[in-house]
Structure formats: structure tokens, C-alpha cells
Image (tube, rainbow, N blue to C red):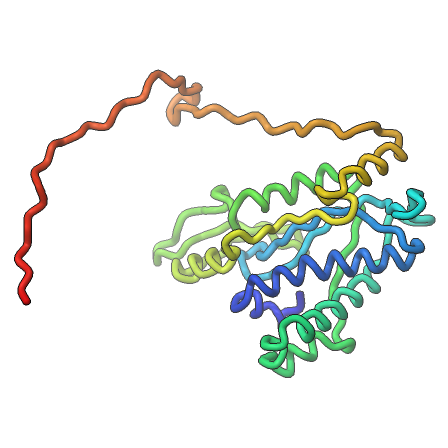
Length: 275
């Protein structure tokens, strides 16, 4: 999402984040259908709202198997010469176009309040960014995204304590150079950066589309059968690590519940109410 439009995620997160997920998925399906004669893909989208310095940086990750299926014939479509179903330039352009149309059509109250810079960011003169990269069998990418689904904008191991002035010190890694540095934030700024990533109540940040949708189980089973796999493997949940002693590291064993101590108390003191 261009920097000019990110403030919408702070004022109307339920609108911007929903449109980002919906329109990025629709843009990808549009390109797949155009390139493969009406075929439909299946993929998983994950909303991610922060950068490495916990700054507000909303974007969407999509894990896309490099196949599509024709809904009428049941035929599988694959990329002919490369590892990608689509290319990044038309995907970015289509995403921008759909976001522009969705804001004007579905949310005119927001559209009329956009500044000239924000409207320029939605125009064809602004180049949006879409990054595509192969991830092999996808397990590594799924593990990477799973960490962001089940935790907040930073992990406890990044906390390095505080300095003499009481500022919070965080470890962070520069994505361009790969070098690790220390980010120093005032406590108020630290709390602010953390809270701006709290999503609206009940907002689903993980969504599945196409034959990866829960409602498309028959199509997904057909795709797996055409690829030589019958049925779906059972989900394997990670093993729960037992509670350990903070001193020796040994596992803690449950013995019994300790009932709370009930202390009797007298009736509440009545206060005199004056007219």
C-alpha cells in the first residue's frame, strides 16, 4: 500500500484492510483468468500491518500454488516457461485499479475526503509495488507467516531492556543490508507503535480463496487427484511444550488444585443518602 494511503488504515482499518485483502485476491484471479482462458487459482492471503521497526506498513502476503483449474472442463493450467502464474507489473496495476474503483463505488464518503496526494496515489500515474518470488514447496513461507498470525508486532526476544533515559531498546534487522541494529523508542512511542497494529474486533486476517477456500473442498480434492494425490492429509498440530521450572528447566507436574481461601466479611456499610 503506498505511503499516501496508509493513514486510512489508522482511521478506517475495517474498510482499508478488508479492501486490501478482497481486491488483491480479485486482482490475482482476474489475471489468472485472462492468462489461462478462464481458469481459477487457489491461494491463502495474510494481512500484515507492520514493518521491522514496528512502523505502520500494511501489506498482504499471498501464498499461491503455481496451478489453476478450469471450472467447466476440470483441466489443470500451469505456467509454461517460468515459476509464476502471473507477472508482478500487471498484478500491481490491476490491484491499484481495483482499489481505486472500490473506494469510489463502495465508500464514496471516504473517497470525497481523500487529499489530492491520496487520489494521485490511486491514479494510473502512480506505480504500485507487487513482489513475486518462488518459495519452493511453500512450507517455509507458511511457517514464516504463521509466526505473524499468532503474535503481536514484535517478539519478546527483541526486547533489549531500556537505556539510562528510560527509553525502550529493540533489536531489529535491516531488510536491505541484513545488518542488525538497535531501535530506541520513548515508552509512549513504543506503546503507540504497538497499539496501531490492533485489528478491529472479529477481523479475519487470514483468508482463503479459490480452490483453497473451505467451501471448495470438492474442487480442491479434484486438483489434488489430478496432481496424483488422493484425499487430503490430516492436520498435524505442533506439540505443546510442557511448563518448565524457571530454575532447573525440568518439567512441572500437575498435582492438584488449591482452593481459594474464603475470608468471611460482614455486610456492606450503609451510607446515608442526602436529598
